[in-house]
Figure 1 (cartoon, one colour):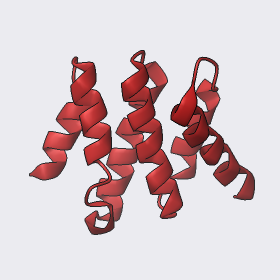
Figure 2 (cartoon, helix red, strand yellow):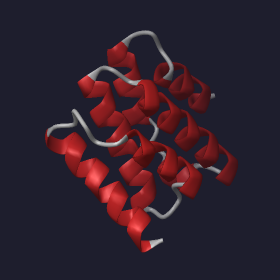
Figure 3 (cartoon, helix red, strand yellow):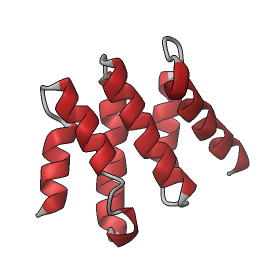
Length: 107
């Protein structure tokens, strides 16, 4: 099952695997069931809350922005991520965070 492998990577102790898992989460975004989307976005969002690696943070925010762009990012996940704030974010991570904040403002 591909989703289990993605989830395993998202919560890995290895930061490169976490980044890869977050990136892979959107590879089949159009094929996920509602339940799979909920699980993936929740785990990516929770992982972002505690992430310390900048590359993994960027991948997590990018993944969540992709889900948001498709209109399938649950509001409670969005609120959790935005609650972390953007202090310390740079470059595209900040851009992804700002996009998520815009999405929240329009909902």
